[in-house]
Image 1 (cartoon, rainbow, N blue to C red):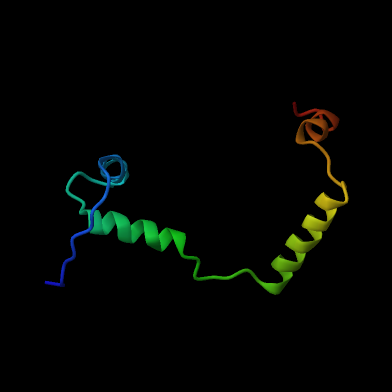
Image 2 (spheres, rainbow, N blue to C red):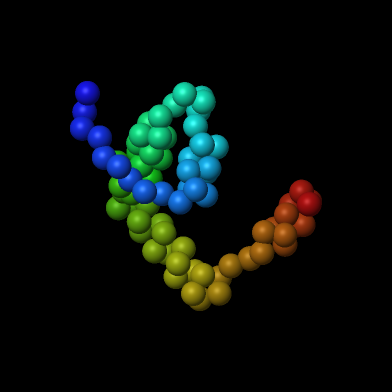
Length: 78
């Protein structure tokens, strides 16, 4: 069996972890491991995606944006 550590958490955090369990007998270690796996992105964005994001930010700063409601109205999909 692997070494164990004691970690102090607030009761509210424990309750939140309980709600995230996939089944009642899932361990807190399994829940925390699953959450950390979800938080770590092993596939960084490509250079092309980063460039698209940069251009999008420039558009936002320059005011080249439109409200979603306006576009939906134009496309008659309100």
